Length: 488
Image (cartoon, rainbow, N blue to C red; front, side, top):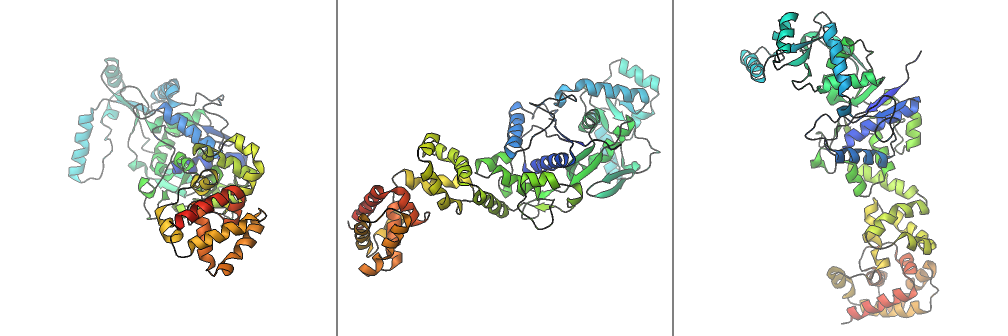
C-alpha cells in the first residue's frame, strides 16, 4: 500500500517570508497537488524572543498572495493540530518520556561552563572532536535518577547507538549520503527549562503529523542524520528527504539584502504579479522540460516532480524576473489588467473603481498604450498621470524642446491643424504627419514639442493615442499653454 503524500512547510515567524522560503513552500505545495496529497502549514515559533504574531500574519499573507493554499494549518485547522509549536508542548513531553523509558535519552548535568571547558580542551589538543564527550552517559541509572529527583539542573540528550553504522540519507534530490555514526554526538533533546530543541521538536511534529516527505533547503542537511536517529529512537517511520540547493545572487554568494529585495512582501509592494513571482521561483531549481519559461500555477501543479529538481545552486536574476513579470502583464486581458492596476491608481489619487465603471471603454483603450511598457505595476501612476492631472513641464524638457528654434511655430501650426480634425488616433496621426513638411521643420521637432505639451515629458505612451484619450479640448489647451511657454 502506498503511503499517502503529506508534506509540510514549517517557517519560523522571526521575520518576513524570504524568497528562498517561498520557493520551499512552492515545491511542497506543488508536490502535494501533483500527487493528490496534503500540504500542511506549520508555524515553528519556538524562538520566543524573535517569533511574533505580526510575522506569522505576514507569512500567511505572503503565501496567500502567491496563490498557495494549505490543507491543514493556521486559519484552516485539521485533525493533526495544533499547528503552532508553542501549542504542542504536551507532545514533546510525551515523546521525551517514551525515550526515557526505552533508554534512548539520558540526563546530562554538565554546566555550560564545563562544556565550554571541554570544547576548549579539545581545540587545544587538536583532536578535532568538539562534540559532547558523553560524561553523563556513564552515570548509573540510579545516580542519574537521584540527581534529577534532587532538582539538579540538567538537559536531556539522545543516546546515539554506537553500533548503528553509518546514518544513510536517501535524498530525493542529492541521492545517497552517508554520515559516520562516530561523527554523531549525543545532542540535546530538551533544555534545562524543558523546552525542546529544533532537532527534537521537528521530528515529533513530523511523526505526529505523519509527514511522508520533508522538502527543505540543503542548509538543513547536517540536521538530517540527527533527526533520523530520533525517528528511529521513537520507532517512527523515517520520511523521505529532499534537500534543495541554495539560491545565490548574481555574484555567486548566498542571496541576501545586498542583492536587493529578498522578502515576498517587498515584491508585492514593488508591483510584481504573484503569478509571475511564483513562476520564477519555481524555476529556481526545477524545470518543466529544460526550455519552457512561462509555467502557470496549474501547469506547475500538474507536472511537478522531485526528479526534475537540480542539485546545483540557482541564481536569482532580477532582470529575468522583470522580463517574466512583463510577459504576464502583456498576456492579461484588458479588464484583468485594469483590475490589477486600479489599486495603484487609487493609491496615487488618480482614479477609483467608480471612475473605471463610468469610463470603462476609456480605460480599456488605455491598456494597449501601457501594457507593452510596464515591467511592474508600480510604474503605472507616473506613466499615465498626465491623463488625469495637468502635467508640470520640467526645466529640461522646456530647455531642450519647447525653447528650441521652431517649437513655437510647430505648436501654433499643430493647434490650427487639430481644430478641424476628427478626434481619433488615426485621424490625429494623419493630420500631424502633414504638419512638418508644411512649415519646413523636421518631424522630430514637431512631434517632440507636441509630446512635451501634452504629457509634460519627452517620454510617454504613444503620442497619437494619448491625444485621443486626453480629448480635443484638453489637448488643444495644453498645446496652447506650451506655445505661450515657447514664445515668451
